[in-house]
Length: 542
Ligand SMILES: Cc1cc2nc3c(=O)[nH]c(=O)nc-3n(C[C@H](O)[C@H](O)[C@H](O)COP(=O)(O)OP(=O)(O)OC[C@H]3O[C@@H](n4cnc5c(N)ncnc54)[C@H](O)[C@@H]3O)c2cc1C
Image (tube, rainbow, N blue to C red; front, side, top):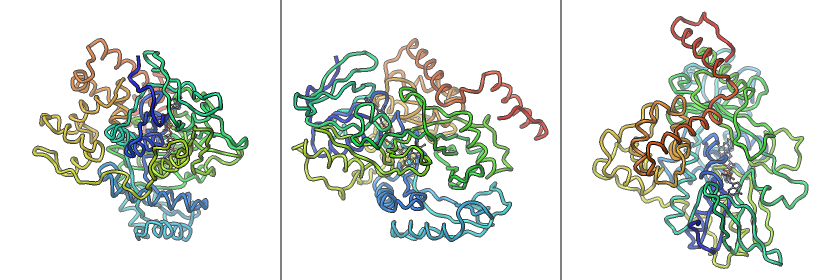
């Protein structure tokens, strides 16, 4: 038995940023809408991005001015409407002799970037200013650089906030529910979907006036592209997460990789630092969770080592890795992955709207375009208002006993009104951060109530401590269990089972599974010797 209505106006398939954005807009317009996600909300690419809300400076270089213009507008909107979730972040672009784009190319690109945002925010840096902003940066051949501003986000929390507010507006969203087929009538018009709860195996049908397929890289599994020449080309991008103590940067640094001159970056995020990203054709089965390969990890590490040669970075110091798939629509698989357009594509077929591509940043524009395409099948859909606010912007006053202003803003950015419930009745010790993160212990019982079915949902997407702490937060699991088990009704046996499944999953998807345990232990041993007895000890290649 599945708790779902028998019919609705719109079914959305896919609980990533695209599906969540459409869900949020439609529910607020008063339509009866149901969102279905086969794994957990944000399980796909939308929790595996570089976490930037950005105009995409490099898209300018490739001539995608409209994409950059839309993205810059959306960045400004999100900074205004969701402070605490979306925050400005300074970038430094170092310029080296005979490497990467020169001063005039950068100056021109950054001027257009500022023009699109109607704000002058970039400035030129002398070499010593670059070093002052990025203390351990390679100084050899450094000619200076530029500073500019973009924004960053907790990607999974953005998805979850849209789902939370869509539900509050009357929508229904269900995770761990796979859509198996799109149902049509004798004339070929869509009339609903057939679905299954992936854990209980219970099946059901829902009738709907329209269906939106927002399944990202999986879009063609449900409905092949209507243009024979254009197909989904999943491009894998991976990141490494380092502790801030190991890679101490205060601002993001964008630089060209010495091996292939691709732009890569180092970005402080939460209490860690991301090094990313790769851009490669993804050939493994799409049913399997994407993981970083040894070659990708070596490539990212080589880039970070070249930029910070004095830090002696190694893979042993890494907290976690993450790989995601860009849903890119391509008409030419010979083109270099980084040259593929990131614009979204929509195809419509008798009540079924399929949408793929796009960026996290432009999710709202993508959502409104999808709804425009679905409008002929949705008589109840009001006039779409692209200039209406995406989020209610009323400031939420901190209650008595609330944590300091920055933490309160962080809570309201992530949970909206839910921030009051987190703080109400929380013990003082639970209003402290989990060591090594900015997450409060008091957030855990609250997020456990956000459709969590498994421990990995909580550790990797409701909060991100599975990516920010060593070994996926293993050392904190006992206290986490004490806080969330009562909410989830998990007895000791159930908890032990969840911990085991989470740890296995973490090692497969976020650890470095191609390192054998023996080699891993050996590397850790050499690392320990290196830390305690200086740099003369050399270990196996990390
Ligand atoms: C490495 C990397 C870095 C990136 N960095 C940025 C960035 O910094 N800024 C930015 O703006 N963009 C970035 N992007 C792009 C952005 O992350 C993606 O374009 C966006 O997340 C795609 O969202 P989506 O909802 O379309 O797909 P997804 O997030 O993949 O969601 C699709 C969902 O559909 C579900 N699904 C599939 N089939 C079914 C089915 N039959 N039934 C039910 N559910 C189903 C999947 O499980 C999945 O959760 C990045 C992408 C990558 C790969």
